[in-house]
Every structure is written in structure tokens, then in C-alpha cells.
Length: 560
Ligand SMILES: Cc1cc2nc3c(=O)[nH]c(=O)nc-3n(C[C@H](O)[C@H](O)[C@H](O)COP(=O)(O)OP(=O)(O)OC[C@H]3O[C@@H](n4cnc5c(N)ncnc54)[C@H](O)[C@@H]3O)c2cc1C
Image 1 (cartoon, rainbow, N blue to C red):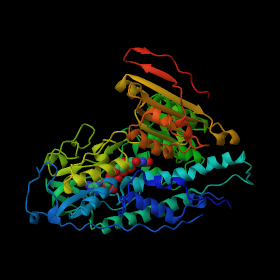
Image 2 (image 1 turned 180 degrees about the vertical axis):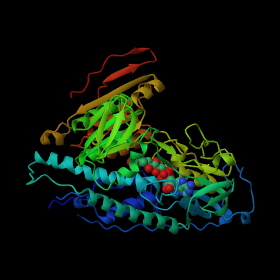
Image 3 (image 1 turned 120 degrees about the horizontal axis):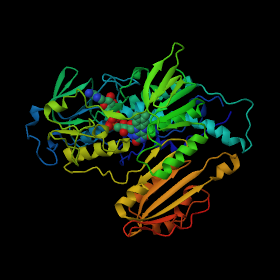
Image 4 (image 1 turned 90 degrees about the vertical axis):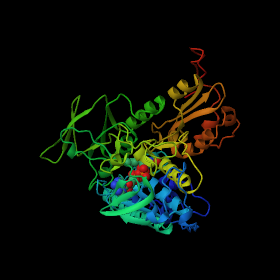
């Protein structure tokens, strides 16, 4: 038996949470709990453990009186007597943003209730679950499946290092899904406890706003000084014939069996992450993308590089091809009809974006402004057009990431209840795509930097990592640093290759801190790592000078 240790990246399961001293954050709870549960290769369904124990830090509960709760950043909320309200805050939606905001508000002395739909792995207008998308249908289950699928590549890699297998390692999809669901159930309990320990009342039911201070929760009316809308979003499938035969990421995380062949529509991060998952687990994967490149919004070179690396692993990309229909055959298979042809598969997955859950929430009736994409419009403090109603997380469509929802939730709580007006800071937020190989990124793309600064220096490196020199596989790593030429400040770092998300978390601090390229250069690398390349790229690959309207001399590219 091969014993597999606890992954170093365990804390990244619930990305980005910051545990305050003495307090237990949602994210930290998730990570510690994961460690406690032990992670073994067999649990990921492979037939080829180790349990760490760590006591959870005790959290201190603040006991400021309810009456001390403030009236909000601008003091514009009607200053009514406490007796008018059942709660200082009612939060609709107990996902990342809602739980964080409620818990922090309660810690600041507010009397808080949060309402959430009953649990289901598939989200709908009437089902959800405490923990929200990240915990139940997003970051966490997805990363568990990514871990599960990565073993396939490790088996391949290991051969050059002397390993051999009597038979091809077999994977048990049902075991992986069972173990994933056990973990989700456990996390569901953990999240309920987080709320309970923070003295936040959890009310199961669908919340709907009746007036600026009243929420109807499945028939029960509750009055609150402040209302926080944190209802997130749900997958969107375009309105084409047969769309009911398509699955989304919700179902893909909970399929009764692994499709031998799957068509995935979409070129965003969710589409590509699932392509990697099914590819690793042995499915034939076809990805259909309307545009001519994957990952719109990411750095162009990263977009090209990741598609090339994924293609090497056998994923087939169909660029410039849009879906027009999904058909169900009598043999139980499905056909994806596109603008260029058709493909038959066991499952057709649409990862064609997500829409904010703003329908039938009573928002427009009370005067909350909603933009053309269905997202709630908020000011810098997450306040809507109605003074007593606030919104955080994906429902505001600012930056749809869990750590961002947490930041917005926390800033809201400080603003509304902490006497500390706080704006969430969306600049230089590092993020990752858990493709295989994964991407880590922080700051501006080359195009954005050029547009913003005019004159930039670009450093790139495309190399074969040490592991691949022995495994003999075609894996490569790409890194890029973008520097504002005038100030020498590093304004973007991008990486695609093994451990990129872990590496970029650290470099995210450096970029957020506004460090210069000279300071990167003054940092001694850790050897032998891939990450050391990020502090040893000395010669720019190109110097772009838009201010003076010319492209300066091409720097000597590092040898590939
Ligand atoms: C497949 C997938 C993978 C992802 N991977 C990552 C990742 O790796 N890293 C990352 O940072 N982000 C990731 N995300 C995004 C992340 O999950 C979201 O940004 C985050 O969950 C947003 O939090 P939220 O609080 O805004 O909403 P949610 O977490 O969606 O929570 C909203 C909650 O509101 C509830 N709700 C809705 N309507 C009502 C109502 N009327 N009454 C009561 N309750 C209601 C819902 O049931 C839900 O629980 C991923 C998302 C998906 C779909």
C-alpha cells in the first residue's frame, strides 16, 4: 500500500480565510476539520492515511449589548427604538459572505438571525444549505475531485522514478463521491456550529424582503434594523432546445457514475477545472468554447499555455463553436449540437456562467437597484439603494470568489455594527484556477498593465520542471512578471504549473504590498524549487513603451 500524507495545500481547500487571533474563522474551521478527518489516497477512490490531530482554537465571544449596535456608516438608517425590531440584522443566505458577516456582526454585539434554504447537493429556488456554494457545490467538493483526479498523473509521473504497477490503478467514482458527500455533511454541521457558537439564530426557509426592515421567511415575518442580502448565484444554462438534458457544475459534482465521455460547454475556470477532473479520472473530454481562447480575462500567454498543456493530457478543445441544442438518444446518450457539428457523449455539462439569485426576492418592490446582469448595485460599503439593505458576495457580481465574499461580509459588519466604516479592497486579489496544471495569478495582465501604465517591462519564463525531466512527460511551467517601468513596481505575477496557487499566495502578499522588481531580485531563492524562478528572472523578455509609442528593444529571452 502506498501511504499518502496530508496535502500541504490543505488550507487552500477553503481559500483565503484569515483566522483572527482567538477567533475561529469559517475557513480555518474547514481547514482544521479537514486535517482532523485525515486524508488518504484510498478516500479519493483509488485502489492503491494518515490522521493528524489538532485541537481547534477556542474562540472568544464578544458580549457587547445589542443596544450598542450602531445605525450604520452614514447614520442614514432610521434610528428607531430597539423594540421595533426582532433583530439588529437579518441575513438572507448562509453562504461564505452571509455566515462571515453574521458571525462578525454578532461578535460586535448585534442580535443576528440568518435564513437559509434546506440542504441539497443540487441548488434550486428551494434548496441550498448552510455553507453555501463554496462549501457544498463549489471550491471544496471541486477541490476534493481535483485531488482525486490528480493521482492519475502522479501514477504516470512515478514510472520514471522507478515505480511500476502490476495492473493499471483502478478508480472507484462512487467511493470518491460518497467520501466527498460525507465531508460535505460534516462541514454542514461545522457551519451550523459556527453560527450557533456565535449566537446567530439560524432559521431554515426562503427569505424574501417585504419592506426595508422586514423579511418574510417561509411565511414568518421578521423585523430587522438591517437586512443583508447574501444569496449568491446559480449556474446559468442558455435557453436552447434540450437544455433540460444538460447538467451544470452542481450535478457534475454528484453524478451517479462517471461519464465515459463528457462534453463541457464553456471556457471559464469552472469548465476547465471540470475538464481536468474528468480527464484525470479517465473520461474522454471535449470542451466547446464560443471564443478562440480559454479563460477570458486572464493573461493572454497564460490562456495559450494552459490550453496547450491541457491538450497534451488528451483534452480536446473545440474553439469557435457554440451550442445550439442538446438531444437525448434512445440509448441514454446525449448529443450536443453546435454551430459546427455535433458530438455524442454520456453527459453534456454547461459551464456557461452564473447568474445572481435576485429573482423573486422582493428587491425591486422595495426600491433596491439591480443592474442589467441581475446583480444588486451597491456602494463602496456594500450598501444598496435602500439605506437599511446591504448586499455582499456573488449577488453583487463584483469579484465572485469566496475570500472576496468573506472580505465584503467582514467589512459590512464593521461598517454597520463596529463603528468602523470599512470598504472592501478589491485591488490585487490573488486567485487560482485548479486546472491541471493549475494557475495562480495576482494583479494586472500584460494588456491591462500596458493600458494602465503605458511603459512596462515583461519577464517570462517557460521551462521544464525538474520532476518532468525524470518522468519524461511533457509538463512545462510558465511564469510571468509585469513591472511598471517608471516606478519599478511589480503590478502582475502569473504562473501556470505545479503548485502555482500555493506559490502565488505568497507572491500575492508581495504584489499587494507594492514591492519593486529590485526587491524581488534582492530576494534569495529557495533551491531547488520552481518558485525560485520568480526571484531570478533578471532580463526582461520585452520592454513595451506605449507612452513613447514604440516597442523598445526585445530583451534576451531566458533559455527555455
Ligand atoms: C464549481 C464552483 C467552483 C468554485 N471554486 C472556487 C474556488 O476555487 N475559489 C473561490 O474563491 N471561489 C470559488 N467559487 C466561487 C465561490 O463559491 C463563490 O464566490 C462564493 O460561494 C460566494 O459566496 P456568497 O456568500 O456570495 O454566496 P453563496 O456561497 O452562493 O451562498 C448563498 C446562499 O444563499 C442561499 N439562498 C439563496 N437564496 C435564498 C433565499 N431566498 N433565502 C435563503 N437563502 C437563500 C443559497 O442557498 C446559498 O447557500 C466556485 C464556485 C463554483 C460554482
